[in-house]
Amino acid sequence: MSSITSLEAHRAQPQLDTLQQIFERQRFAFERNLMPSAEERRQNLRKLKQATLRYKDDLAEAVSRDFGCRSRDETMIGDILPSLNQINYLIKNVKRWMKPSKRHSSPLLQPSSAFVVYQPLGVVGIVAPWNYPIQLVLSPLATALAAGNRAMIKTSEFTPETNKVLTRLLAESFEQDHVALVEGEADVAQAFTRLPFDHLLFTGSTAVGRHVMRAAADNLTPVTLELGGKSPAIVSDSVPIEDAVERIAFGKTLNAGQTCIAPDYVLCPASRMDEFVTAFQRRIARMYPRLRDNEQYTAIVNDRQYARLRRYLDEAREKGARVIEINPASETLEDVRKLPVTLVLDCNDDMLLGQEEIFGPILPVVPYDTLDDALEYVRRRPRPLALYYFDYDEERQRYVLEHTHAGGVSINDTLFHIGQDDMPFGGVGPSGIGRYHGHEGFLTFSHAKSVHRKGRFNSARFIYPPYGAMNKLVYRLFMR
Image 1 (tube, rainbow, N blue to C red):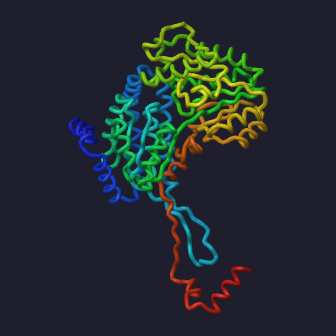
Image 2 (cartoon, rainbow, N blue to C red):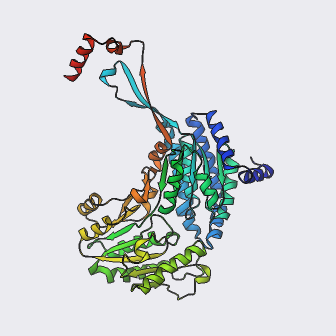
Image 3 (cartoon, rainbow, N blue to C red):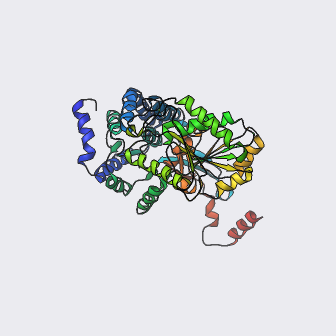
């Protein structure tokens, strides 16, 4: 679909058709090609890659318009490059992953062979959020295509400009019975999640994830829920404070903290609190000496989210917290929806900042006395999507890994475990169900079909009815 006329028709089609009709067209198309070859899948991935490269500048500009100001570099770091890396990784490995997996055949069933065939599920539904509106569309889409599926995508209503570019990108690469992008408000999202998909992937809040799971349950649709939660960063009593601060500051300020795996709060030794606060203020001032007209500092996506974050801070102040805004040039920022990176001390569980996922550039810093105290603080709370530990002592690193639960962990770093293409990504408990990325993503969007194969000779005939002496002999042999 390269002509302007056909492209515009393609863009309008999801608005004209019902979601059910689009779903049925994809299901019908899938049934005509139940097992796409490795080369077909690679070709689909190459088309997606080339279209992403072609539209990368348009996408970066569109995301910035949606946010009011979003750093082009952050769009490259957080959206474009991870998507391209994931596509390249899938192209390289999908042929190997598709090969049947040989399994051990039981002595009871000899002579026979056993193997597993990885078959596409069919039509996959993808519900994407607003915070990384490119990567969280393209990465799961690429994984679904690598597994041989068709896909329908529901994008966020908060990013209409990005959605327009993504619609053009996908329309130039795929027919609608292969990949379809739909937009709309909450009512469209609800109808979308009620479709009888063969698998549904949702990325978003824990609260909405519960509704998605209920809707999917009516169709017994399996789900992957990529949620969030309060991801801790634990600073040890021995790590150089500048090392920890540098990496926590990056993880917290990327996309102005609007990242599901951003450090939500810091656990810092009580004896190092002043040192941490001073070093953190100095680091942020160096990264962002000005905020208002600085295109490298991202705005909060919309008025609703900005008001929510301000409400969290106002309530914390009222309840006795010490709030430290890092605004080096003392600029007025409300009208451009930029929120300074803000440290909060003396935060407690009675405050919204202690209860809710923050999802913005606000960082509570909580003191602890011993490492076991810090780990107990984490364990008393819902299991987070990510955990960060800063310590160069490998024995203590191992201790932390063995005494905490989290979807993923970075040691002496933040965020970048999600960029490891050969590792799964997913939550645990309230932070998510299931995982994708890499080989695990291929498996998530595939059905592992067990196959038992026999030849002409049928050894099982010796235990067929009528049962008698031969059965007893076989039982004795195998029980021995």
